[in-house]
Image 1 (cartoon, helix red, strand yellow):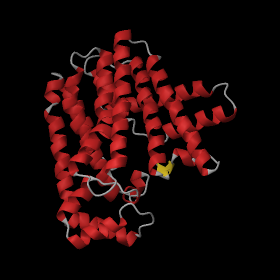
Image 2 (tube, rainbow, N blue to C red):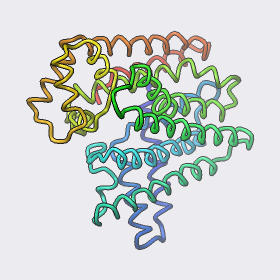
Image 3 (cartoon, rainbow, N blue to C red):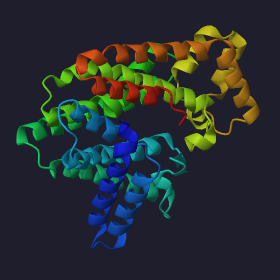
Length: 336
């Protein structure tokens, strides 16, 4: 069974119904805000987080309409976090279209203010969507508490990302820690544990051994694609991460392995807008030639292997194990 093809359409349908119900009877800026949130949320999302929530649920219970409806809470949470992230990074493009703060026709600061409030609405909607599903109260309370912890972890990771990138003291371990907090918790680990909790799974913390390393591997692959991926598949410029000054494993390994002249060339351009394609190609060539790309891929494989080795501890079912392996492969072998 392929979870993506089986459940992605159901997740999209549940999201569409949620927004249709929200928009009904609304007018003015309220209707515009909800309509823009619907457009942004429905645009090109892979639905990774809801799928992992359903997967965690399936480890202990047959998939039903309740968990599909509950899973959209994570997609609404994702919109909330992405809107804030794009404002912080001043990103222009998201999922092949304009970032949320570029979707309104007001002056720049007004657009950002509206977008921050809309993100807050999406956060409220995420809680509403979860609480609106008929699960036993103790399980629902535990899942809601975990969702709050996921947002807390993500916020800590975002703070680390903003502050540790300043200056030249950031380390490879810092990047891994950011990936753990900012990505792994809310992309794989937290969603799976929420689903497991809602199903009554005996030991949800066991999922940490799968979800955390896989989430880190996912982000490492994202960083590789952000530098070497295909722009048409990604739906964004491959230059954007570099122009934002993003210090990834690729960059920090390059600082360890490249020549002084090559390091200086990259340092002078990292975080500056308007890098020429010629200079960017040279940056990529330096990263690849010095061995930083290969070393980053080795690190990705290390975390992927760690996740795969834990699968046998999560379920005795061969079908469960096969699906966990399939989803892990999907996360690290993707091209967008």
